[in-house]
Length: 59
Length: 540
Image (cartoon, rainbow over the protein chains, first blue to last red):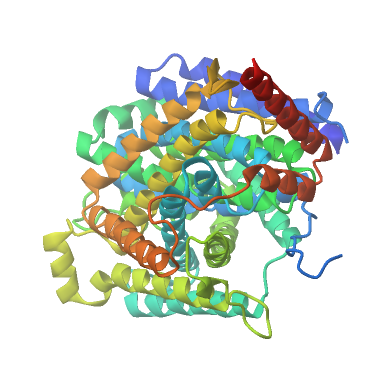
């Protein structure tokens, strides 16, 4: 289960990165929403990884 | 154990339970909000969601900090009461109560809209009376279930939330993979950019997709080790909701649909956002998007309306339950008459609160349904309220209540940072300015100020663009304030000032009940150090 969560979190970070990279080519309003969307995905993936492996996971 | 000890809620909610509790409440909002925003903000719907989403992240962080610091079920009204005093606590709580009653009405309404995808006999446009009767039946049914004391279990919430997260992820992933064209998105944004008025209306409706953060604080009182668990689960919740909302908005503007889009009422071709945002479809936009995802849509057409309806019904139920609980908490705090604390002799549930706020929700449903039930009323609405539909009316009031209560919560975050710096904060909103206030070192939260400005802008947009909301919303607040003054005068309580409370003792009790004994020790050490410092200064 932990492995699946790790893979999903990493996938979310990768997809977020792709979204940011792709949307950066388009006009300002479209790219801005895309970049924020990608950044939110990267942040969520990172938070999940920290929850799985970080120091905050203490009993 | 002494017999006069206050009853405590059992702390049995796990991290996933805490997440799913919030998700089943806030996650349902996009099912309602998407169509409303597309109808108003057209090609700028994604930007409208982005604006509201950024403000939502700020308010989400504020709730996370407050719920982790003060893990009690009172929610926004408790934080505002503690930070700003009784009268503002009452106004915030009263605005939250408005939102909960709208929650009941709006989500029951939309639940039937989603069901109408499979049962056309209850469609709001073609069969207004059967739609109305079913909505009323659902609300009355939920009220009865709550009086009897039946609630959906945390396990059921968790199951539905997990199913929904997987389903929405599948819809969005396949939608973006097979149907999304960035060029179409840019084209739609350029050709269908709305007027400033419609854009403001869209932003004010977009906040509807992010309402329900009260559930974070509600879950805090029943979560094990809330100060540790709540920040983790609620930041994940905030980001999940933001990602879904932005994804749906971008997909709806840049999607090549699997099936052809029907012609509009005049027989002209229309774009996807126009079809999703019209009065007939704006209550079930997510189901229509799901149906138009290639291949997956064939299955999604059947299960998404059911899933959406279940999620919306859970959300509606949280309105019935939440309004009675907030009213109960406000009555306990001397903000509402004690009649709202009266419980049913047999079922031990707050029957009066349940009946009163369900009745308010029914009145709201009647107002919302009138234009579709009576052609004469449709003419009146068209003349005086820009022809707003029923679901628009409910959305207006929802946006007003949320913007009002959230604005107060932002101010409460700042106030509590200044007047209560000694309470340990395991989670703090990022970006703070260190300073000294009344001899204590405090941190001024910059994000709360940014969020307050954003939320005030949304409140202003709501007042400018919603002809019913700008009358009914403030009228609700004024009505509440009059009731509050009458009640306080009869009880000989201060009208504008607050009752004296021992916040220190209360905070120790809150942390003890939460099982956060380390934080309780830290708080008591902070108090001793502060008292010693002050005594030293006084002697010096």
